[in-house]
Each structure stands twice: as structure tokens, then as C-alpha cells.
Image (tube, rainbow, N blue to C red):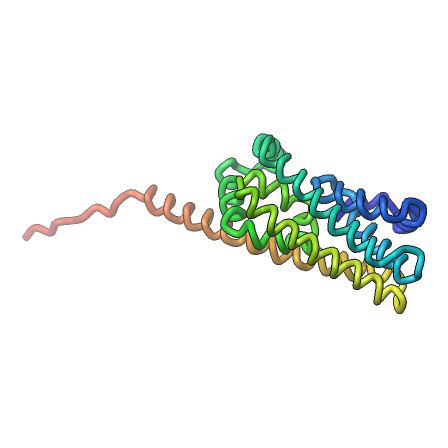
Length: 222
């Protein structure tokens, strides 16, 4: 999930023209929370490395550093001013503050998994770090899992495009990565939304039960 008006051809041209800087800045800005196609730029970098136009290890290092540094910036953005922004977004989406608090708490309970694995999920790759800051995840714990997650994600993406890029076109690689990211996003959305829906339904049922007048007892007299 990113800015779709940036075509794959344009991304390839940027990767060819600016090389390692394109990979580093692309994924850094995406991890800060800016919805640009950082993953696609990384795949393009690995693809070019597989075609001997770039060095595999430098692309891998750029992607890892960009993701890790961008994640740190996103964390502090969320920590210092992310909650008011989230409340504003909630008003636009017509979400109550209690629902946002519930989502924040649920994220906080699973923050380490979200930070480590979030880069493999569409949208969560962009918002995981700011959400970790909003949830006030301890910074050094975030730093550890953010760095490990950045290294794992970069290794998978760069190696995949480096190896598979010698067999299949870059367009196919990007399509596969996008489908996987969207599939995992649907799983995460279901994991977040279904408990909220069940809780809301239970609350409505309890409210309806309390609003019903008590049954009048009749005393039979002989």
C-alpha cells in the first residue's frame, strides 16, 4: 500500500539513476510513516543487484539501515505527537475515542510482534513504528525489535528479488509481494476488528437487557 501514481517504470529509473541512495531513502521515508513505495524500491534494488548493476551486500545494508533509522524516526513522531493525530484521524473515520484506546491497548499488548513482523504487512509497515511510539513501548525494547525486524525484512526482500529476479520479471515479483502484504493485512484487520465487534455486540445486548422493564410478579389470591 503506497502512492500508486508512482509507476514501476519510474521506480526502476530512480533505482538505476540514484542506486543505493534510492533504496536507503525510499524505505527510510516509508518507515517514518510516509506512504511511498519503499518496498518496491527495495525489490528494484535487489533486482538490479541480481543483474550485476548494483552490489547485493550494499543494497542489503541500505535497506536494513533505511528501515531501522526510519522506524526510529517514526517511533519518536508517534511518541511526541502521534496520539492527537490519531484522534483526529479517528474523528474523520467516525471512530470513538474508546475504540482507539482499545486498539492502542491491543497494539501495546502485541507491540514486539507488530514491530518485528509489521514490515511484512501492508500499511502496518508504514504505521507500526508511530503506533509503537503512541503506545509508549519502551524505547530500548523497540530499538531491539525494530533493528531485528529491519534486518529480517531486508534480507527476505533483497534476497528474493536478487535470486528470483534472474528468473521472473520485476513486475511479477512486485505483484507477489503486494498480494502477500495485502493478505497479511486482511488477517491483521480481522484480528483487530472482530474482537471490537464482539465487544460492541455484547455491550449492546447487555444494554438492551438492562433497558427491559422487570417482569411484574402476580400474586394469586384464593
